[in-house]
Image (cartoon, rainbow, N blue to C red; front, side, top):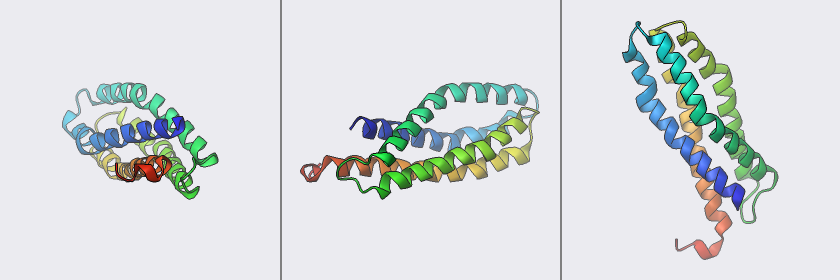
Length: 149
């Protein structure tokens, strides 16, 4: 049950955070302008890493645990599909979003900001699906007695 709770907490935290980033934070990069944009980008990267780094590691550990040892009542495909979504999120982050953030360290670039917003939709959708899957796994693991909850 601990892995289920950690997975749900991390997935739901990241789901809420990614929606905030997608709708509010990334679009506001365009408002920063040329002066100070490199400093803003550097601070954004450093502070974001402090917030999301530990949560993403907990999420990964819990997701792997659940995929290898699915809880009773949870079909094995569900945590494995949720882990696959997380792997795609990590790959997208490493190969797409991180390079775009690095380009912003050189200064304000409207095309890079637009690419960051557009490319982040993949992570937004996948984390949303992970949040749904996490809640579904909790419900299934709780068994029939929780049907009235």
